[in-house]
Length: 322
Image 1 (spheres, rainbow, N blue to C red):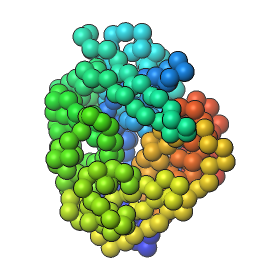
Image 2: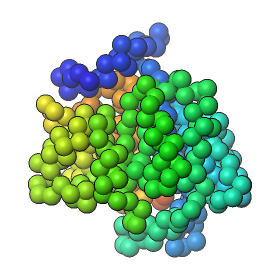
Image 3: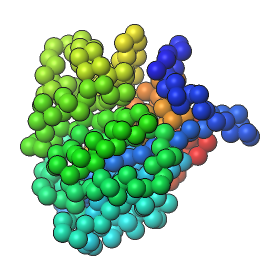
Image 4: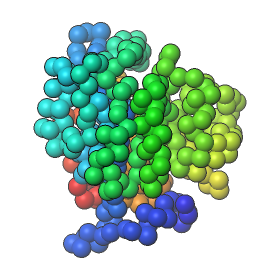
């Protein structure tokens, strides 16, 4: 990776940049590959909402025109049917969705405590059994420009094996740390972080992984310890930090006009950071755009927008081609 002012480029992707002949603007040099859980967030008021961090990220990227390939596994049940129907209606590629005859489509119980949320993640769900052979056989893997996963998908042996196989792909990896009790162990997450191109986590996760003290100092220490090229630390209402070996960028907080809930805000942030990487946006710009989109996510219930005009508004503001 090389830095040019506040712009961060992955050298291999920069070498293959393509430009829209009409606008002259850079367009994505590959598709984002997303692997992980697809599930229903079940709220205490009886609502069931599509969720799972990787699904949320893929949903946003599809609306932003990035054509993600989502690899996951669903049960042969009504919830699985609903997920496929939603993906098809949104125009998403369903070729990476596996069907499990023995395990149910994922479910998470979400209890709201004021304006915050508490997760209860069920065990032994279909997404724990993503088949590596089926995933690696997908022809569209060859189109991947980068790939994304969260740490939760590695809680079970089979999906962990699939993620390990994808690490051999010749494209860089963005990992989102999602520490959900009781589904993580410090040593296992430490192993996932070694040598990553990009990693994202929040202040609580930074502490849980053993890096205490001032957030900036602790994040710098974590980046250096694991050899992460670019570490993103989200700070809630205080914005975010982006840290490399020689640079530190501070993302300014974006006010939330009317807070509804914070479900999915981190996934909205990740999706825009991935979009910025694919389009070679300057990193300071990507960071600020990600914070703005995450703030907008806090103004709706659940983890995704179903109104395409929300995405069109942001694309118009950014001057980005859909």
